[in-house]
Length: 462
Image (cartoon, rainbow, N blue to C red; front, side, top):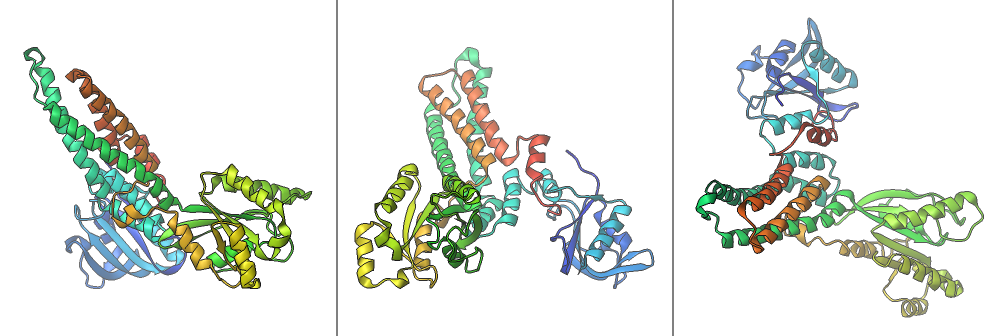
């Protein structure tokens, strides 16, 4: 794929602001900018050094559109590997559109989604996994997802895969060479060393595949369902966790009839809290639909918070424990946090009685904030952040995960072939397939459909 035209797009979010940045990239980017830009120094951008900034005006004939700063990045030392010009103008939507339309009329083409990063990939500035990390970095909304995206964008994952691929490729070359001397019955590839390499590759691939469970959680946030009977303080707890009035709170039972969701960062990890309708028998059609949705959200959640009103504990009777056991039995694999709410209304004797009857009970007052920070610590303890703290490579991309699984499957075939004394020509087939899947990750092996799917998810201007 060779792109010879010059593209333009708004690189900052759409809408009004203090400033906006309009980006051009392509062989004629500096030439087109020179036609519309009048520097206060009177010098042409084409004659200026790369990575310099210039003050002047964007002109449409004799009409001045705006006073701007223009940054010049000459190939190959730019983000895309092409000549790049970035125009910092005032953030009026009118000014933004006037400048973009001016360049479109004078030979530029509007950039498609992710086209600047696509060009960076095609020009060898980034490999495919690094390019995908750019999109993850833009959408990162907590410390953990930002850390993983930065590590991947710097090439941590790519270099690990590239090293394995290179070592495997060396052995593949030797085995292919053996096929040329099949009649002499010689072995160029040391089978013992090859077995060691295959074992090591299998170990690394399994570690990377296992990291996806943590990576997926970090990237998408951990869904936490807050469930319980009506009027026990679920919405108040959601508001306390978010530190804002997100959900409607009232004394009327059944106020929440649909799920209310919002996300916060706890210890650098994203948690998505889901306030659900109270679980009870009801004849109200709308409320019953909300209760049905509650159980759907519990299915989707990774952690369940079961909340009850501690002031009503004496009158709840055996039905309370029956409901609790029902949830435990229905979702045995999900971490369940049982919380007694409204403890600010209890005395020490009542609190001791509660603790003695329910194991692993958390005490909380959503209204006053007692126990909220302890609950956040408890939630954070469910996430294995060890690999994140150790700066290990963590997989967050489902495409990479799929390719790693396929590569591991082929490596296992190679391992089995070595153990059973398979001939070199048959081993070579499985090795080629493993190399193919490694290449899919970094983009050494790709196609237009794959690139289209990946970069379509980018924002325009990046």
